[in-house]
Length: 125
Image: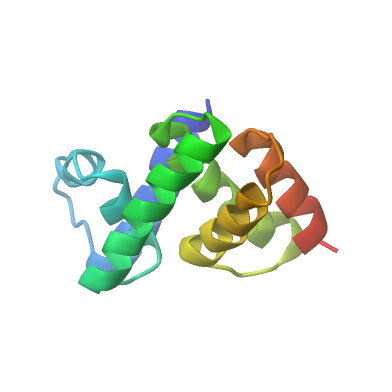
């Protein structure tokens, strides 16, 4: 269920930015991209330095929270979408990941799902 929602969210953002037209392969080509490029597209950036930063954050968060990289990617998108839908708060993926990276570096033994839940509650106020 979450994977389907993530695909729709990513497809909506990317199609809104670049236009998908009627090409049915467009979403598939997005899904074949590495996670860092997908997040960069959602945040509307093509800056190579930022894409490298996304990669670092995904790898680091995955390692520090014992969470697979795919789940880090999906939960980051979910967090962004939930904050916008439920609280009207716009944010971008890199800011979310930077904040959660700082939190995970504090030595707390938390998985990424728990960190995103705490983040949503704290930012949603």
